[in-house]
Length: 103
Image (tube, rainbow, N blue to C red; front, side):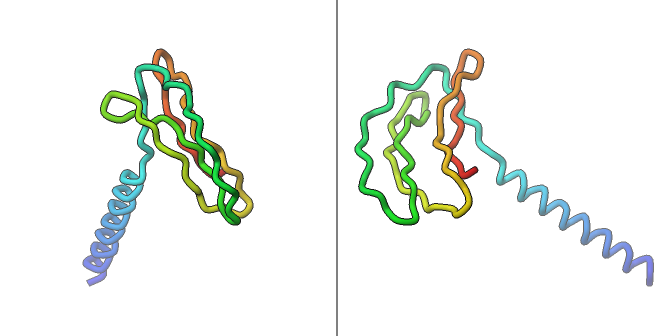
């Protein structure tokens, strides 16, 4: 009886560990790399300030082999954090998108 209980506990632990691994893999970061530098940023007027939000300026997005403009948007503020805008950085002969995030 003790052996079957231990076996059941061990099997349950393996299932839980496997579920956690799948969950971590699905939350993995997507890396976006483009073969050329993005065009110059477009001028985009910043709307009047909104309490509790920061403005995430528009930027170029690499989609289906070309750059597409993504307009700016409001991002809900996180108390105690600062907003770091996204940017394209040179990555060898290519360019890599570093997403905007809270730090």
